[in-house]
Image 1: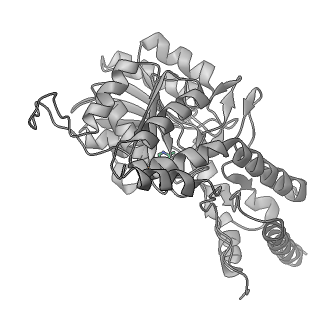
Image 2: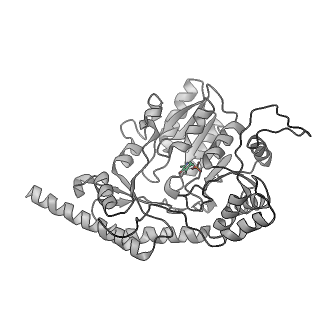
Image 3: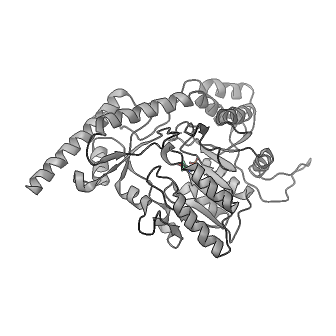
Length: 392
Ligand SMILES: *Cc1c(COP(=O)(O)O)cnc(C)c1O
């Protein structure tokens, strides 16, 4: 067992300015889910990504839920959703009593496959049951193929919710990730590229819709001197203290992206030449935020499965993880329709069985990363020697 502190996948990285905004909240006694930090955080984020408005909420999941409500998703409706993602992308579909239909990834971005989406739409049209919305995820900080996906959804006139929880700071053809759909969603959970410990943001150019989002997120309280409610609401607003943390984090977002990209480069330089290791690609004309450095392992060539490497690293006190388990494989969604990339190829299943996420936190130091690389190289060498013995 190693003596060093555990090297984590992605841990919170404070800038030092957070206390300043928190102190302002205390000094003015704005200890509430509204206040100057919330207003400023919304405005600053909207400016950063280039949208008309943003609504700060308690989580990325809450933001997705609000987007579905604003698009009037209800019981009996279907919503198309990327399969290779975290469960939070799809849970809000269930909150609304609606049903997901899962769409596979394509190999260039690991995100939603336009050809699978096309087949899903074609079937839905035949069944006269188009989805109410399409949730497109930008995995690990890489934008999906937006031109292709937007064109298909536009053809059917179905709105997009862009789940950019992992891709804040990334771009697609020069435009910020999260600004392509009717609604975009960001997360500030503790492991994300910037964090408020917990929080999220719903963005849109539809200012009226976001007004409604804030209303629904504040218990749907009607304008009246007393407490009056004519519809069901939620308590989804972000605290003014946490919004202060968010403001300071947003100031360093571009630095965080640069650092994560540098971490990726270092991994790639050290491991990229190994026959059997392939890093997650960066699509042409996109800018990946490299939230997590991820790679796939060719078990035939290397003689080991991702889980063996993950366990080896864990014993060395290094956290790494498999790629997201596709939602269509989750027990929760076992009867749910799924459209693979091609009829005989499921890309998300391939990525799940071959992929691994490496420690990528922007607060990881040089030495820590060098150690991770050293351990991977050592494991790789041990396995290739075993393989030689076995095949001799
Ligand atoms: C983190 C994440 C979310 C959820 O965000 P929370 O703020 O944790 O609710 C949604 N989608 C994806 C892809 C995520 O990675």
